[in-house]
Length: 259
Image 1 (tube, one colour):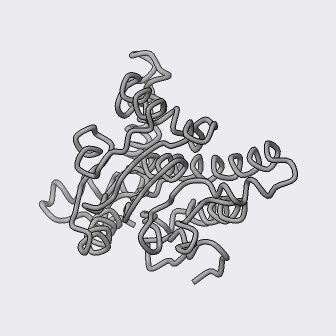
Image 2 (cartoon, one colour; image 1 turned 120 degrees about the horizontal axis):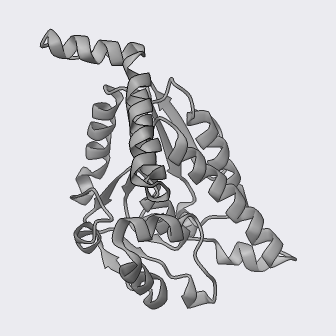
Image 3 (cartoon, helix red, strand yellow; image 1 turned 180 degrees about the horizontal axis):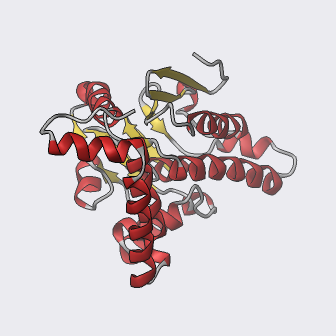
């Protein structure tokens, strides 16, 4: 286990597990946590890791920014910009790495905690989890990629509703809105996350990274540009060890053994 102050990081085989670990502060995000998240994300950006599980310690996933920490800073704006920059660096790395990022939302995800959760590739939510933006309630504006991912996930109208009214979504509501992959019983969240992580660890990391890369660019591309990207990538994948193994295994009617 790598030692951090505000998170824990463990790697077991191809699976890395990151836990937001400030339970006494509702896992609130401060400058130390964002620096550590960015460092942990960089550690996961390797072919040896196929899955990253991100969750919170205690009753909260993450209640958002630590406002007490922000208020104590002599230059609030400068301090908050640094916190946001490090958080954004972590999210950018998670989004662009080959590893599948699984958020296991074990409780309230508010503000930047909400943003961080929905930036994951697969999102599991405990039945008791809830989601709220909460930025405008304290006179601030969204960060943590929320204005990028939310409109793509649920559209502009619903995004505006969440950001302007600070509506609180239950786990079931978040699932119906398309924000959550699966809702599970509270006492089954960790087990389900482990099961899903094991499933993803047996797949091709390069193929998963290709899916992520294509989808990340899809709204910025025209039809022909996106199809050209698809054609080039599938051709490149066909020349890789995983691509050869996957096709050979299918033809031999056996389970593939990806590196």
